[in-house]
Amino acid sequence: MRSDTKMDVRVKAPAKVNLTFDVTGSLPDNYHSIVSIFQAVSLEDFLTFKVIADSTEDCAITIEAEFVGHPGAFPLDQNNLIARAARAFHAKTNTLAGKRLAVFVEKQIPIGAGLAGGSSNAAATFIGLNNLFGAPLSNAELRELAVQIGADVPFLIDGGTQLGQGKGEILEPLGVTEKLTFVIVKPRNLSISTPSVFRDYDVRLQTDTSNWRPKQNHDLAISSLREGAIEVATESFGNVFEPIVFANHPTLGAIKEYLLGLDCWCAQLSGSGPSIFAVVSNLDMAHAVRRKLKEAETRGLAPWSKEDGWEVDCYFAESVRHGAIVDAECGK
Image (tube, rainbow, N blue to C red; front, side, top):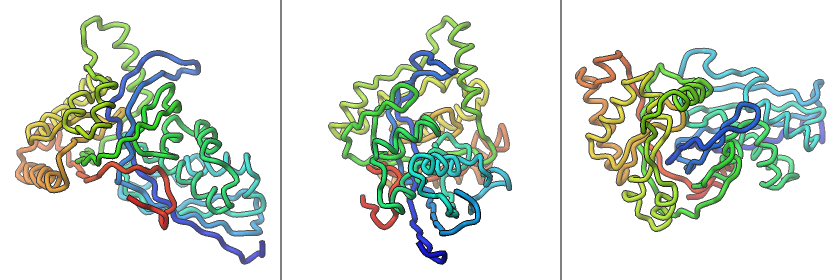
């Protein structure tokens, strides 16, 4: 490769929501075992990767980003999951020896939202680098590397609708073809630490003997999704973290109830939050829900505005059948 040679690729990185989410036990190294139906959605970041030959450093990585939020909300240093994924890929393939990797991120997935934006960026890094260097690794090998970076990253290599177990890395594609439509609501200035939610869950599990865990039925949800009966499937959705997170942030529960009052099929926390997603019948309904949310906020009638002074960001998304994917090759 000549010293002036550049290679570049642009990758779409979808967000993830948890249609169901339950904690089933403990694992070594302070991890928890979970069962969850993961769904990739069309709220996506775009990452451009440029590999420049003959760097004076080995596997030099620079990251730039365009995003909404306060400076520092999205780290640009070597702790970013993008850099960690690139180093893991290089350690396996030695493809970045004597080269510089420049990454530019166009962030549309809100930061700290419980939508796996960071994990999606890591998955995009694996897919982008694998594409640039002629696919030295299979998707199975990429998923093995992805586990080193985070529990959500393996799912976002392939995306679609999958059942996740273990830490989330044991995956079963579910073959769902019917499209789901989402309204995703994120309080603008609220982020929630996932480890803190797991700690609060452990405490409550040990101290609260009441029947506080939300009911959900993964098997019925899966069979209904496969049959295309989306509204029926939503009756079996649920998230075990809701009582934990809503106790600490009651207004998130108020947002859920507000969405249900707008005739959404369901509304629930995604992951550890703070995003609340609603499933609706189609994009016209999604637009109507967003309009009513913003009207209530503007008129000061929304509970999140009245009680906490929150502003919320509202996003539309549809389910997608891909994970991180080279932009030019994207299909529906």
